[in-house]
Length: 302
Length: 109
Image (cartoon, chains in turn blue, yellow):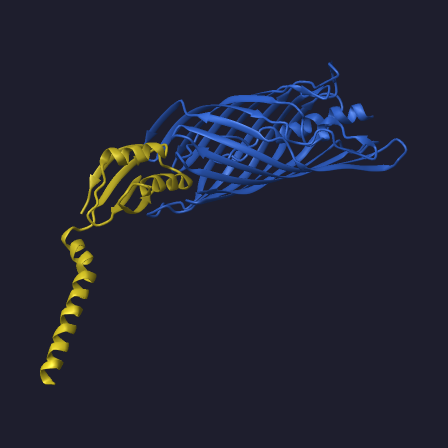
C-alpha cells in the first residue's frame, strides 16, 4: 500500500514544483529570456493550489497541495541574472484503507529551494520588439524536511517537503516579444539524484507560452498598463523513480497541460493568474492524475 | 533721532537685499543655464515591466533630474538638472545595463 502510494505521488508532486517560474518571466508556468537590469531586484510571489486524485476507486486518493513560491531575481549585468526560489508548501493526502477507514496524511513547511543563473547569449533588438535566447543552469538544494512522519510512520518520499538530494537542472529559453504579443519556448532537463534510498526519475520538459495584449487596443503616451490574455502549454515527461535501487513501475509518465490565463503588467507591478488543465496524462501504473493547478500572484520591481 | 532711524532703515535695506541676492542666486543661475533635455531611442523595449529598468539605470546618472518613457515609440526622455549635461556613452552604458540597445541620442531644447 505504502509503496503504491509513494509511486503514484511522485509524478504528481514533481510535475508542478520542481520547475518554478522565475521572477522576470512573463509566462507563469516557466521561465523566459527577458532581462533583469544590472543591480536591480525583482521579486515574485506566486500562490499555488493543486488538486490530484485517482477518481472513484477503493482507495479514493485525493491530494491537495497549497503553496507560496517566493522568487528573488537579481541582475548581475544586462545579460546575466541569478534567481533564488523558496517554496512554502502545505501537502495533504486523503485515502481510504482496505478496512474502509479514511486517513489524512499531511505536512507543511519550507520545501527545497532552488538557485539558478541565466545568461542571454543571443539578443536582437529592434524598435518595439526583441528576440532573446538564454540558457540557464541551476541546482535544487535539500532545504525541505525529508524525514517527516505522522502516527502511521514516516511519510512516503513524494509527500515529504524535500527530496534530501542535490538536483541539477538546465535548459534553454527563447523569447520573442513585441508591443502586441509575446511568445516563449523552453526546453529543460532535471537530473535528480538520490537520498534516503529513494531517487526521483529525471524529468524533461517542453514549454510554450503565448501572450496577447487585449487592452489597451491603441497605445497612449507614456507607459500604460498592458492587459494580456495568456495561453501556455507544458509537456512533461518523467522517468520512473527508484526505491532502494529498484525501478518503480508505478511512477513516471508523460503529461500535457494546456493553461488559459490573464496578466496585467505595469511599470512596477505585474498581477497574474492561470489555470493548468491536463489534456492528456499517460502515467505509469497507479500514478495519481492531476485535476487542475491554479497559480496566481504578483511581481514587483525594486 | 531722525538720523539714527535713517541709518537703521538703511542697514535693514542692505541686509534684506543681501538675503534676496543669496536666495535668488540659484534661480538666476538656472535662468542663465537652462536645464537640458535629451531624447533617447531604446530598441527592444516592448513590455511595461521592463521600462522601469531603463528609467532606474538612467536615473542613477549624476545630474539626471527625471526620466520618462513612451513605450510605443521607444523614446526615453531624460531631463537634467540645471547646468548638467548627459554624455552619450554614459547613456548608452546605462541602457545596455538595463538589457536594451540605444539606437539614437539627441539633445532637445
